Length: 382
Image 1 (cartoon, rainbow, N blue to C red):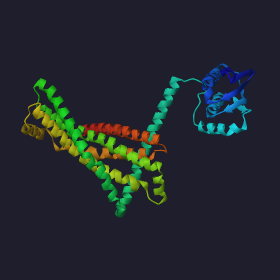
Image 2: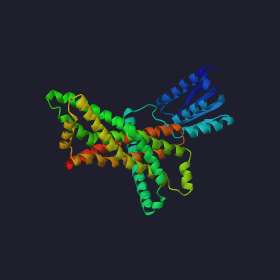
Image 3: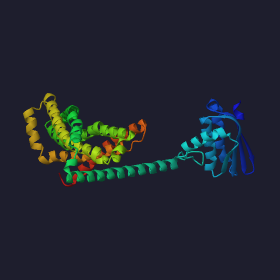
Image 4: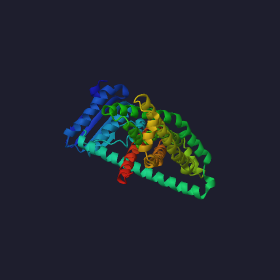
C-alpha cells in the first residue's frame, strides 16, 4: 500500500479526524514516519482544533513500532490541550497499545512541537542543580549512617568485622603500594627535571630542592595518591556494592537482620582511612627520591647537598599539612563510592554509569577539598 494512504486527515470546524489504514508496522516505517512527523509539526497551524479522533478501523496490522507511532500522535495532540480519542482499533491490539502507553508514560512531549534553546538550557541547569543537591544529601546521609554504625561498634566491640576490614585494607593499601610508588616516583622525576630546566636559566638550580619538597609534601603527594585511590579502589567499591544491589544481596542482609552499613560499608571506610595516609607517606617519599635522583643525574646536585637543603627548607608543618588532608580525602572517596554503589538499579548499564559517576565525583571533590585546605592553611599561615 502506498505511504500516502496510511494516514489521512479531515478537518471539520473545531474537529480533526485522522484515519489510519493498511499496515502500521516497521516495514512501512519509511512511509509512516514522515506522515506522523508532518501531523505533529502541522498541528501548530491548526489552532482552532479542539477535538481529535484517530480512526484505526481500517488498520489491518499493528506491531510495536506502529503502536508507538499511534501513541506518539495521540500524546502530541493531548499536549496541545485537545480532547483526543482513538476509535475503531481492533481489540487484539489494545493490549499492545496499553503496554506502549505505560512504557512511554514518563516521556514528556513538547506541547509546542519544537525546542526552545533558552528553556532547554534553564531546564538542564535546574536538573543539574537538583542532582547536585541530591548528591549532597546522599553523601550527608551516608556520613550519618556510618557515624551511627561506628558508634554502635564502639559500644559493642564484638560486632566489629575485623576480618573484612583487614581484607579491604590489603586490597586498598598493600596491593596498591607498587603502582603508587611507581607513579609518584615518576611525578617527582618530572617535577625535578622541569624545575632544573627552568631554574638553571637564572642560576637558581638549588631552589629546585625547595620546590620539590614543598610541592610534594604539601600538595602533590596526597593529591596524586587520592586520585589513584579514587580511580582504583573507589570504582571497585561502587562496582562491588552495585553488583550486590543488582543481585538483591543487600535486601537479603536487611531481611536477616543485619545492617548493610555496618557489614559492608564501615569496613571499607575504615580501610580507606588507614590506607590513604600510609600510601600518602610512601608516595611522598618515592616522589622525593625520584626528585633527588633526577636532581643528581640531570642537574648535578649532589645527594648530600639535596638532603641538606631539604632539611633546611622542610619543616614539620610542611609534612603535617599533607598528612592531615589524607584521612579527609579517604572519607570523601569512600562515602561517594558507597553512595553511588547503592544507587545502582537492575541493569549492567546502570552499574557502569554509577561506577563512572563515582570516579568522576570523587576526583572532583578531592580537588575541591584540596583547594579548601590550601586556603585554610594559608589563612592560618601554615
